[in-house]
Length: 112
Length: 110
Image: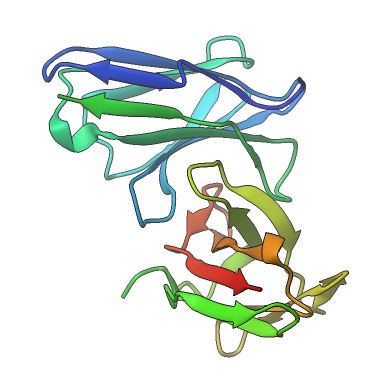
């Protein structure tokens, strides 16, 4: 499968714990996005990488969220001290240009 | 005002009907426009880009009106398999994040 891959698909964690998600984009796609989606809403932008450079980060993103793309290939999204409000689907997307992006199946996070 | 606004629906139409969705955006400097489709509990999938001259892909037609800051999606001869949520996406100029609307839900009934 050469699509965008995300791991894990599901994560249940206790409030206050740290979690890390991984995204493997489509090979040679230099653009990588992270989004968050809750029920009934469209995806909400979190951050954007071009190669290894994090070029944009949503002002809505608190300091508890951090993302990396160390070698310009896979990316990780870490949430520290999780809160119940962090429960959502976390989506990763990649693109070779500005002509739309391709999404992975997402990581569903439940904070209990 | 939200950056990208869509009528949430739901739109319930019979098979074979023609249905149209509109989406308005607030940033006049927006540069790129797309429609995505999202099935229940699945990831969004790119349906089509929207160009200034309008574009058509089979039963789907997308149009852009920059003066009024809206884009539209027309689905002709709707099929049961067209049932999904349709997301409008706008990319601001000199920016890289895609801004999504909340989506319009379509149900095509036999």
